[in-house]
Image 1 (spheres, one colour):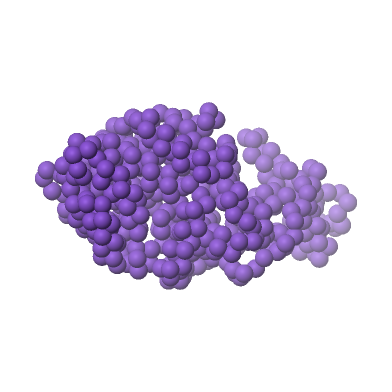
Image 2: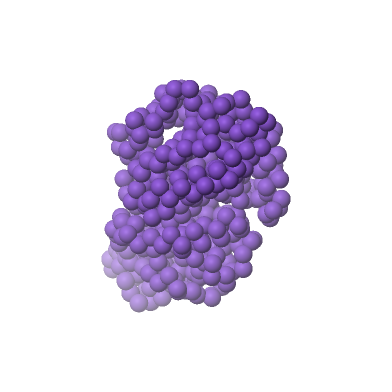
Length: 477
């Protein structure tokens, strides 16, 4: 695919835990005032002249245009004195006028206007716009209607300054293991995001370790260990017999995503599968977050070739913009000190880490719109499994990005150009991807919609929906 950008790609100015991401093998829980709410209203048509006011920098301000319309001469403002916008809309007629104009905006314009009102702490206007949005969103509707339901919840939580409270409560209300696995299986079946991460990293690791007898894989987000089941299958057929493999699996001990927090179960399952393929195997579980990982937790042994796997995980680490500890770069330096033979990195291609609220909102809207469209292409809109998977594996992350700040905002994505700079500063050098990696992904994508595309640029493999890049995979030494 030719349209995806190079390393320095910055998503369009409109692009975006427990500590989980929509791509994470662990998924998440959503916040909704009423998770079963569903409105079937169709989107309104754009209003002529309400596409927004240009601020001179190419940014459209839909809210400013709405206010301008309400302050036109025909309004019944008392000429004897000046009047603020909130004074105007406080009158029932102005509330009705605002609601009427807003109802004729398309969903994207309406969401942006609402985000602008929230950013300006214009509570009365935000409430009117949210009321209009309530009648337009639907968890079983078109992709934009579904995404809007979750963006609305994020805006409401931010307006009420309750984002962090809501998010923390959700961490105690995660789906059960069986529910989680069911939701994960739905997304694994209908979307290529997990397979993109697993397959691209596995091909890179297998090629790098082709002549090694003892391999130590450090997986910084082991989840259920599904990635390594595929690797066992492939490595068992290796000429001369499979090497000894040891896996250190890291995951948050408080997360229900790690098999109820019991990494021992993950190890037992992997041991059983490795045995069935005749692969000598040993497992070590480290039940802690990436922020707490230290050298002694990794148990590196002399004589083992080290491979480190970062699957949609590093963006959960706070960087210098959040804490002086800068765990994002600290963890990269720690890994570099291990002298690994190969490091694989898969991340979302989105720019939400240090972006101010409004650009972050626009980026989130653009990014997840593409994701919801990709899901829509593979699953009926009234499919309850799809609805549940979006709710439990995507919605909370959207709320976190929109509603939370500081240390409470854990979804902090960066585009590949920024990851590249961090890795280079930590002492890594890029490892060129062999043609086999691209061929593997190309063959995998044959199972999905032709609107999924991939491209390689400056050593990274991009996966996207239509013209929007959604994830990148790269290798480092």
